[in-house]
Length: 268
Image (spheres, rainbow, N blue to C red):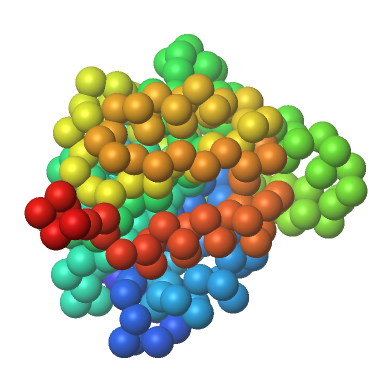
């Protein structure tokens, strides 16, 4: 797999699909790798050239010293785009990846076509929870947290029927480097975009999960209400809605990103 250079490391990425199609960048959640998007790849590559990457500190990307920040993670996306000669792209991020997308839309609006924010929030607090998690990971690693964390990623009913998915997600989480996980926790801890999301100008779709505990529907509704013209879709899922609602998630994203822009009143 290829790597893109960063000023202080490198990003592991995969670029798949027809180079003549618009680029869709996918950004993973905390404690996963770009493999979390595997369920959507068949549908996404029909419409887009798909660029997946492991967030700094995750997967096979560099584990640089922390703490990280959302501005830093958004800057990594720009560096990746520059490396590949991509001027503009659609961006879809889930949870931490969604907050990366918010930072990208605020700090680098010219690089975005459309934005999809999934199971995320302008603010995922309180900080005390993240401080405690960072301390636990620094003391004992990621593995002890895996069962409880993954239990919040999927609804209980879905998890009971899909033990292989649960096991695969726990394996992915356990493989996340503890130092990278803790540094990324700090980025989420310090991110508060509640007073800034109204500045987003990109056409935006917000996807929420009706059973999402870390970022409940109210968080998605806040984003939809504060980003001008944003659309909102709620799926019957928990935090990793793309895992539980594979086809519905992909269809919502593809339909939004491929829809023509609305006619202006003058054009109408």
